[in-house]
Image (cartoon, rainbow, N blue to C red; front, side):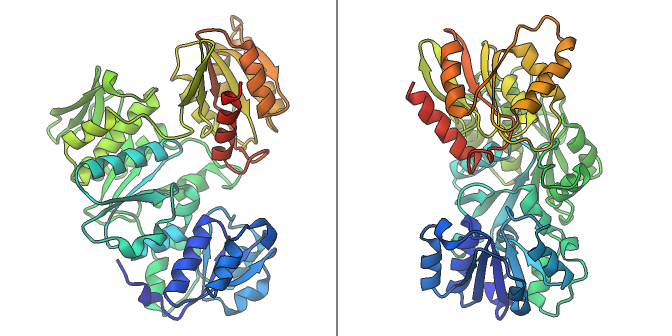
Length: 480
């Protein structure tokens, strides 16, 4: 840990006035820093936040990112939602002005043990489970990062005996690589430490599948960002990895003794696995220690069993008991927008899986149901492959309703592979928007069916976030 005073005197420009930017501006101003915030959105689109920050002494430059701001900047703290390729940040890097972000600054300042979790899917569920298990075991626990509130808001309240559980996205983890600031020279010791390579002492990469290729220039770049979570651990660090995923299995074998594997298919020493119907933790002699049966778990889907195994491993490494694990995993019913039950109407069950923003997440959702499915899919594509998802839709789905920008793309993917599944009876329907899709699903669903919103796409063609899309879906279902 470090004290915020080790960065005293730095002139800070915060790029992006979202939740993290607002929290950073508030925190740094409270600690006496000279802070300027810039956002591409004009003030009228940012609500009451600009006025509140201005009253606290924060300088605001809104509606643009003028390069003149770089003339008096010692450090840029960038919202992870802002692409590194925007001209303002490219100019900063050309001038060798250092970049960081809220989550990296929090880790620099945090006095407590940090558990870091990433992956292409399952991050939020696993992070939430670990937090609840640690709390059940009696530890003061702080959960955040890519979920919940920015942890910089509470860093001054955290004590060394607490535990922090962080979900970290690839966009955040880019700032944990020192090479992001390659060529930057600083004699400021605090700043040098902030810009250094860093990984949490207990880390998990759950899985890696294609994602965010609309933002990352290549799959290689995406994987490299994820690896920041594990590549810079000390010798005593522990890494939790998914054995059943090709990419994490390959990466994990490079670390050998540091890795704790979780798997639905195999049992590894010091790992976690599903042994028939029992969820078990294995010791170094490969002896199983029972946690719970599969039937006792409330969450749907094999992917959620993997999330539970990963959470138990992480919690064990942080000192939690099996009793604490069992008390949580047998009562936990899930996180909002993740296979969330909305209601039953006329014998039809409606589920919200708006967090499904990739074809891979859609595949996992479809594998979670044995009932006939009326599927709502669409939104904004993320430049990801659709063939595997299309095949599964044609195998498992009774009716698929396409909506949003990606309608034609998904329709073409279905048509491309339909000849491989000649027995498929899947009906393909189109809707102009989510409201029309919900109404059409209600007309076509039969008693015993599941209506599932699992879009497989980002929400930005019509909504600000997957959460907003999920909330709208739930409103529409309740109005049926």
